[in-house]
Amino acid sequence: MPSHVLRVARPTDNLTRVAEFYRAGLGFELLAQFNDHQGFDGVVLGRPGTPWHIEFTRQHGVSAGRAPTTEHLLVLYLPDQDEWAAAVERLQAFGANECEPDNPYWQVRGKTFEDPDGYRIVLQNAGWA
Image 1 (tube, rainbow, N blue to C red):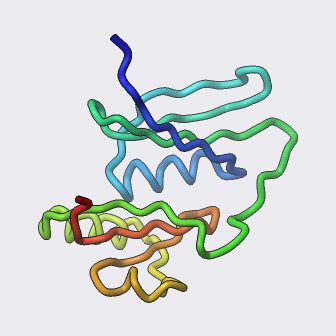
Image 2: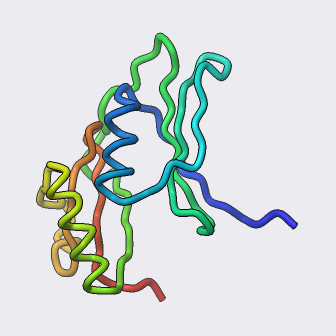
């Protein structure tokens, strides 16, 4: 029986750089990859066995540009302090740009980073009930 899965898909001009940011910086795994599929190249990243993944695509001959605003966020809730600290350290070691969030709520228990396309990732040291 198929399970429900949430896939977030986003275009990029920097497919290799963005994929490496999420793989090495956030610890996601490469779940699938495709080249020249009807004019698109792409990668699907996530964690095996979880009901979500993120897809990045590059359309041949089309420019995706950077994030339209600083409030385009991907928020990851990491309640375990050690796991959260390890994720922060991984992104810092990767050279990710840490930035101040527009919404001060994300500073209380989190850290915000920018990916190569200017989209922001919040690592929130909290659980989601």
